[in-house]
Each structure stands twice: as structure tokens, then as C-alpha cells.
Image (cartoon, rainbow, N blue to C red; front, side, top):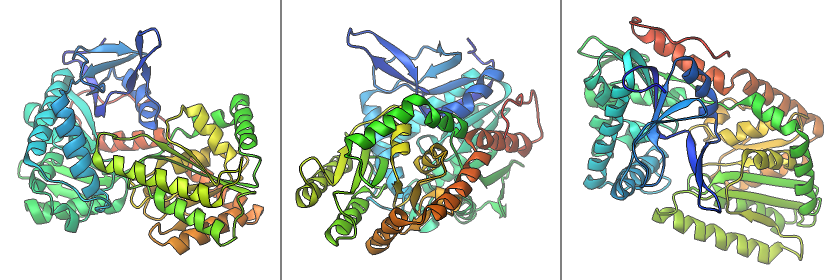
Length: 479
């Protein structure tokens, strides 16, 4: 197990790549979390004797490093008060809504900020203690925006990268943050700051020039200590081959057929899969579907909408309110348009393993991804990867990062209810050859730019940002 300052690569993320699972007999074990980030970084971590620093969830886990499935993991324990203020508070009730175009109103509390600073410092100290001389440290996402600068103060020898998985807002929004300069200076501790889209990188550089006063040129920021920081877009992706293989497996194909049979073998299955979050546009898409039923454009005897809403941040008030609103809407729609054995909406407030998700993707004729704002949205790409028959249709919000790549989807403005109704109907009734042409092109895009290519592109760029000092990362990923 690699610890105590010997790791050539350190990943710093809010969560560890494992979840604790408790069995009926009271015993527990760690299981690798599903998700593309773990898939992408696991092989390069192994090749470079890397470690992953993160919070294991809960408040009762000690801070001793441990090894799981060949990965060295360094847990950061959080108290109940820190979970409330740092995680649920500043991260998810201040930064999250602010960065997502004020879909909900952000709250600004000094106590939350103080906790954010304290927790970020602890992450930086733990990363510094585990990194070898001249090592590479890759910091992930909005919960840890102060870590790059705190880490540089502790370890100026390190090569530091940061990647933001959510949108980075324009100046008009970001400037509302009372601690805007501290956040910008925190990110400037990195050598490379990565964003999902070029617009996010441009927003960052513009704010640095306006609010911090550093000289900039295109995607570069010039700092007084002679360092150069690069801001660049690296659109994240998925494990394309893994999803494609899973979709072709006999168990997933059988389960997909079973799902359609349980739904009454309708002519068209619409599908939404989201975290239960106010940015995802779940309410508006269900309203659009219900109006198509009302207008007689769709018939409940032949069409059904399956909406999976994974529980999320249920201790945050806005999320409890959203759940109640969607529960009521689903009840009204099913009461108005459903029949015995034929609900208009099959609503599932639960999380499912990857195999069940793949089966749902295979069972659906129309995938509906309509966030008001999303950094990328990997569900859209997962659906595309699972459609190996080149059938199926994708309705995609133009405000999802994935819209820049998946241009053949039926793109919609989620604020335009009539436009969304038109897109749902067009996707459901499209000529099969048109569907196939669109899906073939989208599959090619996702296959060529998978999550391994994303990680390799970022780390290769990070390796070039500063003159290399020390051991380079071993190449283990291929585009």
C-alpha cells in the first residue's frame, strides 16, 4: 500500500471511489462506486502507484488509509456539522445553484464558508502528505476549489491539475459570491484548470482578469511568481465499450424485454433517468408529456413515460420540496390520464445498478434528457452507447454540455413547453431511417471520445503545462 509521501499520482475528490454496503447480518464491505471517473482513473492509478483522497460518506469512518481492489484510498473524515455546513451548505446550497444559472436561489452564510475553507485545507494537507516529490495531483470538482492554492503553498514542487465537472458561470452570476476572489485564487493554484465547455474556460479567464487583475492571453493566465496557468475545455465522457458490452449481454437483453412486457408492451416507451435535482427539468418534461396525452397526440394505451429519479441530498430543503412537487404531479397525471394497468407515468424514486440502467436504456424508444443546466450529462451518452442496434431517439436539452457533441439529437429549450412537446412527438414518430442516421453519428462521437481519452487528454496537457521535473506519468490509457 502506497502512502506517506510516495505516490506519483494523487487523485483528490470529494468522495472516495467506493461505497460502504451493509448486509442484513450487520456486516459491511466496500464496493467500487459505479461511474466513469473511477473507470478512467483506476488503471493510471495502478500504473503510477497512486492514491485517492476523499470522503467515504457518513460521519463514523476513521481516517486510516486502506487498500481496496488494488487501489490505495485515504479517507477524510467529516463531522456531522461539517457535512451540514461544508457539503450540504456551501457546496450544494451555495455553489451548486450559483453555478447552475440560479435555477434555485443560492444562500450565502459565513459559517458555511468557514467550514468550506477548513475542509479544503484538510484535503490539501492530506494530499500533500501522500504525494511524492514532483508528483502529479489531480483535484476534482466544485467542493474542493480552494485545494489547488492551499496545496501549492504546502508543496510548490507538485504539478497540480483541477477539473470542474459542473458549469462555470458567467461574471454576472459569479460576482454575487462574497468570496469570489478567494475561489478564483484557489483555482489559480493549479497549473491546468479544466472545464466541460470552452465557455466555462473563457468565463474563468475573464473573471481572473477582471477580479484578480492578472494578465491573460486567450486561455493563459500569467501570475506574478512566473507561473502560467492554462484554462481549457475537456468534455468528460463514459466507458463506451463497457456500456456497449453490457447492453449486448443476454441478461440485459432479457431484462429489457421483461421491462417492456411489464409496461404492457406499449408502442413507445419514453425514459428519463436523473438524480432528483431541480436542475434536471423533470417537472417540465412530465408536464409536456401529459399535455401530449391531453391533446390526443399520444395515447396512454400505446405510450408510457418511465421516470427514474435517484434520491439526492434529501436533507436539503429544496430537494424535499422538489420531491413533493413531482410526487403530486405524477399523481395528477396518472389520475387524469391513466387506466387500470396502464399508468401514464411509471415513476421510480430509487437508485439502480448499472445492469438495470442498461436494460432501461435498451427498453426505451425515446430518451428524454432536459436539464435547465448541466455540465455534461452522461446519461445521454450512456443511452447512445447502449443502442448497438442504432435505433432509439434522444431528446436533449441545448443547455446540457453533451449538446455540443450530440448534435444529431432532437435538441430542445427546456423552458419552452411547446417546443418540448414538439420534440417528444417528433422523436417518437420519426422515420426509422432518420433515427438510425442520427444514432449512428452520435455513437461514433461517443466511441471516439470516451472517458479514457478524456483522462489521457487532461493528464497529457498537465504534463506539458510546466517544464517537467521528476518522473513523468506512465502512459496507460489510449484514446
